Structure formats: structure tokens, C-alpha cells
Length: 487
Ligand code: FAD
Ligand code: MLT
Ligand code: ZN
Image (cartoon, rainbow, N blue to C red):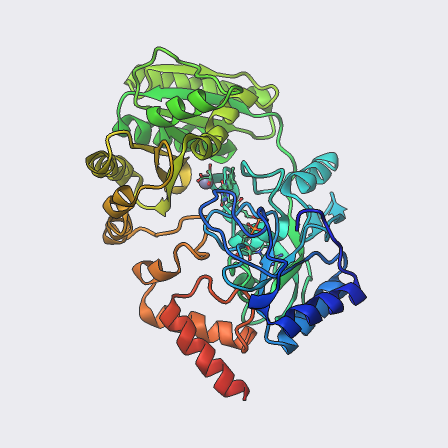
């Protein structure tokens, strides 16, 4: 809630009593943006109230009261999610973790860090770095997104190519069930083979199973300052060759492998004053950003230079810059991380975060451009993303508001094309509101039915983020079954 009213135990009770007396829809305190809207501005809903507890006990009391009144609750962290998962749709109570902050443990010897759910990723990274550790997750929204939100979305980002997804680095979680009961899954053990791993169910559950209140991560030792290379590639085949070289020549030092296409670069440099193009006169269609970071900076820089030389010799790169080991060259990362920000400034943005074989990226972007152009002459398809993970961020941009003709040209075609290629309709951003109806394109029906059954087991009254993740038919069946079972 802008203005920042804090609800303590008593205030919380009063706020909820007011909401339930009037009925959620009649409450007048409809939330203003940003809490009722998302970062892209695409999803805007309504909510009578936002609760911002400071303590886990307050959060538990809030959940218990909401559950008793069958009031739906939307957990919210930094509200940087890109699929509308943290946006209240009709009349849900927003439960924000922005005041539940603080790094609670940094154990350099064990390589373990813990933080409360609302702690920003940047704050956690700073605390880890001070102890010589690093967080195996990094993404452009680091200053605003919260670690609880990161875990709830199983966020990906630029380090997956090295450390894997959060599923492999979350050691423990503290959570509250829908009725406020604590679920303590906090033992920070590397090995714990004791049956179903419930914390894995919470990772990527997008606020539909529990409120995550604390996170414990394995934090590897910080590497030395990275060596970077930014290479201009003449063809998509050349991009794949560079990726092959990166895996072969950098080995375990490979720390990031990202790509942007020429349209992304044009957009970022046009809309962001802090971003510049290293090769302004290059006609190359694709650019690859590689980072190597191991235990010996000179060695990493030498390996990177050899890689760049080989890329030039084979024609995989036609232009390139390689930085010696030193400070993380901010300008190159600003260009890559600036693309989504520029898209937000540029006007309408149709966003597709998909996984598929890297070989298929170019064809999908080109077909997308054709369709977008047929619908509207000034629409531009841009492709960028996490090359090393097979994660394409395909976006279509044009000035002004969203255009129904463009949307109809792109959807459902793009998702069906990804499904036909046996890709995933969501590589890393999650399902949220945006893709709930698309889940059947990436998951078979028995899997969706099991997901609904798991939802009922955690949240029989279906009060936690009720309109997200599951398609409406599975949600309806699950909710009805859950209530019948509970009754
Ligand atoms: P929110 O947006 O507040 O919530 C996201 C979802 O998690 C919602 O469904 C919400 O209900 C749920 N949730 C939030 N907190 C909790 C909690 N404590 N317990 C239970 N459920 C909770 N994502 C990537 O994967 N990779 C990227 O590289 C990347 N880059 C980005 C760059 C920019 C500029 C932006 C704006 C976003 C980017 N994102 C990226 C998307 C976003 O930052 C991530 O999804 C992030 O993990 C969301 O965290 P949050 O705290 O903002 O969550
Ligand atoms: C990124 O990698 O830049 C993010 O996932 C954001 C986006 O896809 O736009
Ligand atoms: Zn991404």
C-alpha cells in the first residue's frame, strides 16, 4: 500500500474485520498501483487491503484470520514477477513480505546463508560477498525482488548455466500454511533423503501452497573477478558454435552465457541513456556475452582470450571485445540487462519466456517477426536470453498501447509452436495468471490433476493465490473436491 500503513496484531484484526464486515468487494480501500499492478503494467486487479507484517507471528495471525473468514490471500514480495502471479485479481488480500527483512545467517565455513523472505536479492548478495561467498542466483531485478519471491518463482537468471536452478541450491525453507500453521523445513542439510521433499514443492509454487517466510541457500565461495567476452556473430549457427566453444574451453569456469540480437541492442540503446553499443557499425545479427570466473583470474582471462581467438579463426565471431580479469564490466551487463527495461519504455510489449532447443530460436523469432509485421508495420520482434540454458526471451514491441491485431497474430500461435517443438511455455518466469490456461501445453492431464490434488492437500479451502498456476477447470474441480473433503 503506498503510504505504508503497518498492521500490527490489533490493526490487522481491525483491517480484516472491516474487510469481512463489508464484504471484500464492497471495501473502499481498493489498492492503488504498484501493489495491485505488476511491473509491466499488463496485469492490474483489485484488492481491499495490503497487509505488511513485520514478524512471522503477525504473518501467521494474518493467514489464520483470512483462512477463518475464507478470504483469499495473494503473497507478494518485490512485485517484479512477469506473469501476474503477485497481482490481486478480484478481492484478494495482499500479504506483502517487504517488512520481513534481514539476513539471519552467513556461515562462511559451511557455505550457507539464510534470510527472511522479504530480503532483497541484492541485500543477500552483499551480505554473502562480505563473507567471501556468492549467491548462486542473479538477475536484473536484484535490487527489488525478494528472496522469498525468487524461491516462490524458482527464478532463473544469469547463473543457472553454472549453478543450476534454485531447486539445486535451496537447502531449507521456513513457511506458513494457508491457516497460519508453521511448516519448518529449515534444516540446512546437503543430504536429507527422508521421503517426499516438501520444500521442492514450495519452490516454484508461486504463492499457491504456502507463504515462504525464510530461505536457506547453499552459497559457494565467491569467485575471482570475472573475465568477459562480447562477440558479434554473423549467423545463428555461429552463435551455437560460440556456445560450444564456451563449454569446451571454459569448462567449470563458465559463469554466464547470454545473447542479444541486433533488434534488442537497437532498442536498449534507443531507450536507455546509460547503455551503449560496443560495435555501433556492426551489421552482425547476434551478440553473445560470455563470463568466465574461477579461482585464478589470469587463467580465466587467458582461457577467454584463447576462446575469442578461436572464434575469430573459425569465423564464428566477426567482432569482439574481451576484458582482462578485473571489475565486472558493467557496460556489457547493462546492455544485456537493459533489454527488458527498454522494452517497458518502448510501448506495448508482448512477452514470451520459453524453453526450446537452441537451434530453433532463430526460426521462432523470424516467424514471429513475420506475423507481427503482417498485423502491424511498426512491430519489432526481439530475441535475447539465457543461451546456456536454452531459454529464449521472445518479445514483440511497438509504440503505443497493446494492439488486439498483434495479440491475435501471436497468440496462441507462439505457445502452440513451442509445444509442438516439445519446449516449455514457461522457462523461468513461472505460470502465474498469464499462463494458467496454457499449462496443458506443457504438462499432461494426469500431471495437472496431481498438481490440483497437491494444492488441495496444502490449501483445502483454496485461499492462497486462488486464480494462479492451475487452469480454471482443474482449479474448479480441485476447489470443489477440497471443500467436500474438508467438510
Ligand atoms: P513477486 O513478483 O512479488 O511474486 C512472484 C510470485 O511469487 C507471485 O505468485 C507471488 O504470489 C509469489 N510470492 C512472492 N513472495 C512469496 C513468498 N514469500 N511466499 C510465497 N509466495 C510468494 N526472472 C527470472 O527468472 N530470471 C531473470 O533473469 C529475471 N529478470 C528480471 C528482470 C527484470 C528487470 C524484472 C522486472 C524481472 C525479472 N525476472 C526474472 C522476474 C522476477 O524478478 C522474478 O520472478 C522474481 O523471482 C520475483 O520475485 P519477487 O520478490 O518480485 O516476487
Ligand atoms: C531477463 O533475462 O532479462 C529477464 O528474464 C527479463 C525478461 O525476460 O524480460
Ligand atoms: Zn531471463
